[in-house]
Amino acid sequence: MAATLRIPTVLRPAMGGASIISVEGATIGDVLGQLTVTFPAIKGQLLNDDGTLHRFLNVYINDDDVRYLGGVDAPVANEDEITLLPAVAGGAA
Amino acid sequence: MARYASVLDLIGNTPVVDVSYLSPKSSVTILAKLEGRNPAGSVKDRVALSLIEAAERDGILIPGKPDQILIEPSSGNTGIALAMVCRLRGYHLKVVLPTNVSPERRQLLLAFGAEIIDSPGTEGSNGAVRLAHALADENPDWTFLYQYANPANPLAHYRTTGPEILKDVPEITHFVAGLGTSGTLMGVGRYLKEQKPDVQVWAVEPPSGEMVDGLRSLEDGYIPPIFTDNDGTELLDRKVVVRPRESIEWTRRLTEVGLFVGISSGAIMAGAVKCANLVPDDQTATIVTIVCDDGWKYLSTGAWSDDIDEVVERAKKIIYF
Image (cartoon, rainbow over all chains, first blue to last red; front, top):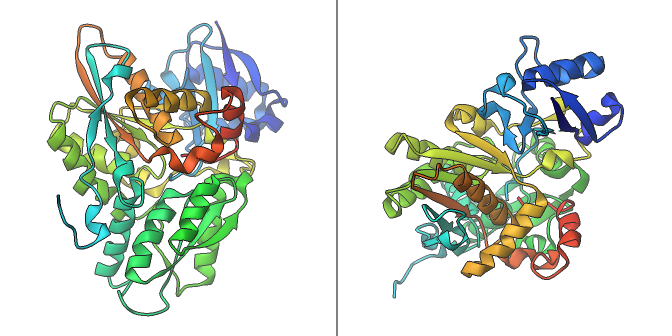
C-alpha cells in the first residue's frame, strides 16, 4: 500500500533531500520503522528506543495527529498523506 | 448601558454567536465565541490580566513602584494585551517579537508603550522564546512571566472562558480551539471535562514546524510546559493541522456570517468544520469554537482582497497564530 510522506525542512538533509516521497506500511510504526532502515541517520529523530514516537515529532495522517489515532499503531491506508512536523513553540497569537 | 470603572473590567464575558450557516451538516450547530470583543482585541486579554494579577499577588510585581520591567516573547496578541495592562499598572514591558508578524501587531505594541526587541523571523516563535530566556537570564531584575509555562495562563481560561461557555452553551458536545501556548485548550478543556466529561476537546494547529528555518534538528523542538503540566496529550481528544490555504478560505467564509476575524480564527473554524464532518449523520452536535481576534490586525496581508494563491504564499511567511 503506497502512501505519500511530506518531510519538513529540518529532516530533509538526512532523508535524501526530497520534500515528498512514497512510503509503504500498514501502520505508522511500519512506515517509520522502514524509514529508519532506509535512512539510518534519522533513527533517533523519529522513534524512541522503545518504539514510541519521538517527543518533538508530530506525525499526521491526512492532517490528523496520530497520537490521537492509536500512535504508532495508527493504520495507514492506500493514498493517505502522512506529514512529519517538528513540535515548535505555538504562535501564541 | 453598563458603566465600568476600568477597561480591565471589560475583559471577558464575550458573546457567543451561531455560525451554523457554515456548518456542513444541518444536525451540527457551530457557535463562535467572539474574543475579539475584549478591550485590547483578543483572547489574550484574559491571559495578560491573569499573569499580572498572579505576579502582583505573589509580590513579584508591585503596583506603583517605579522602574519595574517585564519581558515576554510573543508573536503579537499576548504582547499587545500585556502592554495594555502594563500601561494601566505603570510597568515597562519589553516584548520579544519575531520580525515576521503583521505590521499592525507591531504598531499596536508601540501604541500601548511597549518596547520591541526583534527576534529572527526565520526562527519563528521558538526564536523569540529562546531570546527572551537569554535576556531574562542576563537581567535577573526583570520579571519574566513566561506565558508558555505560567499556570496563570490556563487558569484564566479555567476560571473565566470555560464557565462562560458552559453557562451560555450547556448543550456543548465539542470544543475546538487553537494550540498556541495551549492555555485556552488546557484551561477550557480541563473545566469542561470536569463539568461535562463527554465533551470532546479538539486542538487545531498550523504547520509551523515546516517553515521554521531556525530549527536545526528535532532536538530543538518545543512543547509548551503548560501542555505537559496539564497532561495535554490525555486531555485532548484529537489534534488536527490546518494549512494556510484552508485558514484563509475559512477566514473569508466567516464574512458570510458577518464575522471579520483574524487568520488563526479562520484556521480554527476550518478545524470545527472537520469536526462537524466526523459527527455521524444520525447524531446531533453542538461545537463551540474560539474567534481569537478580529481581522483588523491582518489587513496588510491582503487576506480578504488579494488573489488567494498570493495570500497563501504570504501567509506561509508570517506568523498569524
